[in-house]
Image (tube, rainbow, N blue to C red):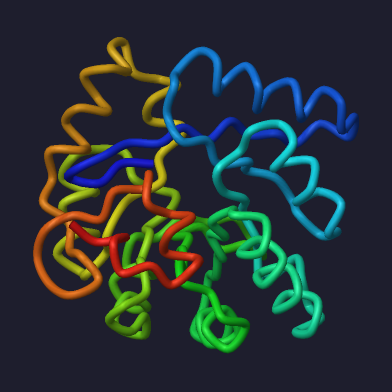
Length: 210
């Protein structure tokens, strides 16, 4: 994840074996020394405890994978209690509303349709305005270039979550540097929100914006 002031790593910890998933998080922490997002299909409180024990700084909650509003809210609250940032991901208007009602302080909008897996950056452009000031807005998926990241920043996002572009890049370090150089918004205006402050944002700490 990149903003104009910071970076974070997000290993996709999706294997069914929780021990392997935990090992990936620990490896990312040791290799990069950056804040780590456990990017998984999180559906059980136990996974948050595993993430915290492994050294993760934040977890991903996919609204579409959590149809129970009470469970979604409970997971957001537990993340805050454990000192984890909760990136709550939505792919439509109803999802953004559910994330906000659940108490999310970091809302991600994926540009991938979770029903047919098509990608469209206009999804982010359309939904960005639904995320209120004071909530960190993250654009996800279909971001293939600095121009794409800039378009998301202009739509009002605080940061971008990028995976495939970096995996395919001949120079991932340069690609991250270029993405981080884009001027993203803060929760209160132009600038950048560092992902390193995700846990603070989840706790309601105003220091999440610099």
